[in-house]
Image (tube, rainbow, N blue to C red; front, side, top):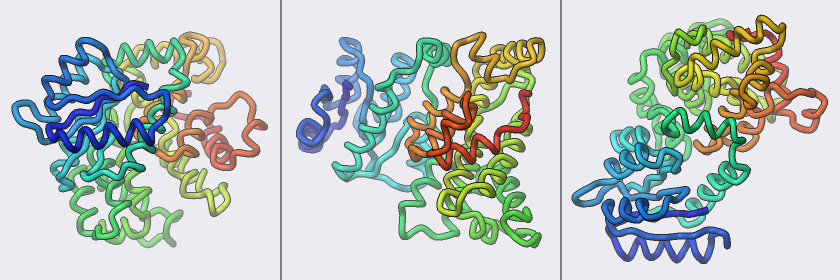
Length: 353
C-alpha cells in the first residue's frame, strides 16, 4: 500500500514517516510532502492509495488539496489530521475526507486505521465493482452528522446538549430519532417528546447509525425507489435484527441491519438505471433483486455497501454482516451471530422486491 503524508511542519511529517516505517507493515511505501502543491506534484508523478493530510497549511490548505485529489484521483482514500476538534472543522473534513483524526494523533491509532484501509483495498473489489466505483467518480465521505456523532462516542467529555446541536442540523434525522425512540420497541409506548429523552433512550451509537443511513445519499427517484422506502425498510429490519439477536450482539445487529442496504441507496443515487434495470430483470425472471444484480452486473449492492462501510471504519462484524445479508446459503452463517440476525431480518421483501 502506498501512503503519502502531507504537512507543512517538517518535524511532524518526519516523525509520522518514521512511525509508519517502523511500526507499519513491511509492504507499505511511505512518501512525504511539505505542502499541498508538492503533494500534487508527487501525485502527478505516481498515484498513491492513501493521502494523510494536515488541514491547516499555507497557500493551499488541506480542504483544497483533498478536494483536488477527489477530482483527479477519485480512488484515493483521504485521511485528515486536524488540530481543531470543533464541530465546524469536523463538518469541513467530513465533506472531503473518509477519516478524520485530531492532532496529535496516536501512532497506534493511525497505524490501525491504515491497516483497516488496507484490508478494504487488499481483496481489491471485483472487476465489476471497480467499474461501479469508477463510474461513480469519487469515493464518498460519510455525512457530517455521522462523523461528529462518531467522534462524540469516543469523547468522555461530551454532553447531551452537544449531541442535540448536531442532530438538530438535520430535520429528517430529528424526525427519525423521535419516531424510533417513541416506538414500543424502545419504550413502553410513551412518546419521546424531546431530543434529550430520545437520545437517552437510543444511545449515541444508534443515533449515529441513523444519521449515516438517512443522509449519506440523495436517492434518484428514477431508480424506482425512494429514500423514504429505503429508510422505513431499514428501520424495520434493524428493529427485527435487534429482537432476534442474543443480547450481547443486539446493538451491532441493529446497526448492521439498519445499514445493510446502504449500497442500494448509493446505487439509487449514482446509477439509478442500474437499479431500475435490475428490478425489471428480477420481475421478469421471478428472482430476487440481488440475484438479478449478480446476473446482470456480476456484483451486488451488498458488496458495495460493505466496501463503503469498511472504508468509513465501521466495526468489522457490522461490515461482514452487510456483505453477507443476501448470502446464498443461510447455513454458512451459523457461526456468525450478527450476520445471521441481519440475514433473517432482511429475508422479507424490501423496497426493490
